[in-house]
Each structure stands twice: as structure tokens, then as C-alpha cells.
Amino acid sequence: MSASVGNIVVLDIGKTNVKLALIDASGAQLAERRKANTVLRDGPYPHHDTEGIWNWMLDTMKEFAATAPVRAIVPVTHGATAALVDAQVENSGLVLPVLDYEFEPPATQRTEYLGQRPAYDTTYSPSLPAGLNLGRQLAWLASAYPAEFARTKHILMYPQYWAWRLSGVAAGEVTSLGCHTDLWQPSRQQYSQLVERQGWSTLMPPLRNAWDALGPVLPALVERTGLPADCQVVCGIHDSNASLLRHLDATGSHAAPPAILSTGTWVIAALPGGQLDGLKEASDMLANCSALGQPVPCIRFMGGREFGALAGTEAMPCSVADLQQIIDQGTYALPAFAEAGGPFAGRKGSVVGPALPTDAERTALATLYCVLMSDWCLTALGSAGDIVVEGSFTNNPHFAPLLAALRRGQQVTVTDDASGTTSGGWMLAHWGAAPAVRSHAADPIALQGWPQYRERWLAQLA
Image (tube, rainbow, N blue to C red):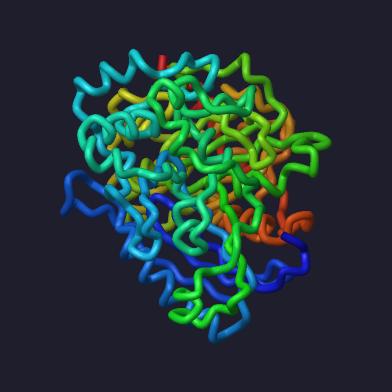
């Protein structure tokens, strides 16, 4: 799409929240609405509330359409999720509910699947728990629900499911296909052997660019929402790749590629231009695919979820004094506090040292933990240049300064946009234009004993 497209709506479906943002031609946000991303347990397995999202989205788009003319809609979603659909787009199209990737299929199926999945050095997709390998989800659904699976016309990655429902056009796209799915070979930019062996090749729709306009919004939706009849639906993208997009130039490279720390439910460290031969499956390291098709070395942990486990869901703000108190008294959070992947998956999290009597101190411990985990991930990736922090942790005033104090010689920059996914979505609709996003360098925070605290934390991981 061109840079003159005008106002757009970005549908941003994260694992925890769903957001709709109305953004003007300059990249300025005009309106935003949010809702919780609910997992339903009233069906054959835990599944996403696609109809709840759909109806909320259409109602909100009607509100937005009454505010400003909307020229394009861009879906951006979390990974490890796919929809199996027939041809009935007007009735959701789903032949089975959209499986929640945190659901664990039977152990016997995992054993069978491990014998089917491609080698790590072809997909750079580590073996993950639950349904984080999308190939395992699909294999289980095909085995457990053969009649429903047989009705499938398309296997749609999650962003493209929403694009299909809006436009009626089925498409595939590499950023979701290349997100630890076992379905894609990033170095070769083609499907893995698993797709052919399972007979799924014919179910994969034509590949399109993330920024391609698939077509206008369906007429029935125009009538329901008041959107313009020529409002285009963009193919869409995986969320952490949306955040990465503005750091790539037209050739998919960067003059001096920074490491990107995309923070939210998942904290994902990405190193554009980095080498794949340093990736280790045991550390949950992987190669994602950028929107331009290039493999990008990555490592991640479930930072937002772990922060909540340590600080509580209603975390209280903490002060520099609270952080210093945790360091001085020697209380440590040792991974992991979420079961879904990460370099320490399978290890049960623990807090060692003196107890924390206040909510602020628990927030301080959670902050220190997430910084230490981010630092560990950046070191594992081989990050030696600039670091850019994006996403929800930019709202924590201590996160980037603490990280900067550990990464001496590397400039840590914080964007003023708490949602790099939204900026990435805007870029897809205005392909060729760069969003006007301000950023600032994080000044290292001066905490006594902070580097030594890190060394003691690392020693306890051995």
C-alpha cells in the first residue's frame, strides 16, 4: 500500500489483551480501545474467544468509522496460533475452535510428534512445551478430530485469519509461519518437510507480503460498521515482527543493527543481521522471519507473565530505594515463573533470601528479575551494539536504566511508543514510510552493588 493511504485501524491481538488503534496518516494515534483476550473452556479444549473479539472489533470499528474515514485495516497478532477454516467466511469459517497454545495435548501425542518434527538446524524452531510449536497443535487436531480436520480448506495463521474474515481472501505470510512453528525453513524461505509429510501443502494458501492489500472489506461488514466500501484489508503480521519492522531498511538490513527488546507478555530479544550458528535449541533460541523474509536470531522468555507472578497482578510502583534494598539484603528471584518456554523452561522458579514484606519490594524484585533475564538473553544472542527497548516495559521507569547499567559500552534506547506493534502495523499500511517515533537514551542507574548482584544471580543458575 502507498504512503498516502490515510487513516488506518490496527487490530493488535496480544496474548493478554486485544487492542484496536485508529491512527492517522502521520502515524499519530487518534483513538484506542482495549479488551481482555479471554481463553474459553466451554468447548473440546481451551480456545480463543474469536466471536467475542469479532463482535467487539466490529462495534469499535463502527465507532471509529463515525470519527474519521478508515482507509485500511491491519491485523497484528501473537504467534503459535492458527485457524482451520472452510469456505464459509460469513459464519466465522472455523471447523474447530482456535486452540490456545498454552494447552498441553496428551503426553503420548508429544512422543509421537517428536519423531515427526524436522531437525532444529533446518527450521531453527526449538522443541517447546504445550502448543508453542504450531506443528504439534495441527498434528494433534488432525489426529483427535479427523472429521473436522478433513473439512479444512485453509490453514490460516492468526493474523491472516482476521484478514480473511474481513476480506474473504485467504493468504499465508512468513512472519507467523516462521515463529517456532516447525512449518518453515527460514534460511531457505520455504515450507519444512513436516508440511509435505502431513499432507498440509494443499491447505496452505498463497503466500503474500505482510504489507499487501488483500482486497476491500466485505460488503456485509461495510453495512454493519459504516466503513468505506473501498477500505482495504492488509495481509498482516506477527506482533514481534511488527515491532522489528521499523528497524529494517528496504533491503532488510540496518547500517548498524541494534538488538531489539520487544516487551510484553513475552520479552523477545532479536538481533537482525546476527548469525544463526550460535543458536542453541536447549536455550529456546530460534530464528524468526522478518517481514522481508530474512531469518532473525531471537531468544525470549515470558517476561510479562513472570513479572506478574512476582509482583502480583496489581503491582505497586517501586522506588530506587526499594531496588537498592533488594540488592543490599540479597533477595533473588531464580527462573522460571512461567511454564511456556524460555531458556530455563522446566525449571521451577524460586525466591531465595530475606522475605519481602511490602508490595513495592515485590515489584522491585520483579523488575530486577526481568532486567537480569533480558541481560542474559542479550548476552546469549551475542549482542554487542545498541539496544532498543520497546513495548510495555517502557512504562517501567527503572527497567531500561538498570539494563543500561549492566550493558556498559552499549547504548540502551527507549522508544516513546509503548506499542511497537502498532507502529509496525502503520508501516504495513503506509509501505515505504517511516513512523515518527521519538526515543531517548536511558541513563544508567547508579545502584551500589548492582553488577555484583548480577554475578551472584548468575552463579545460582549454574
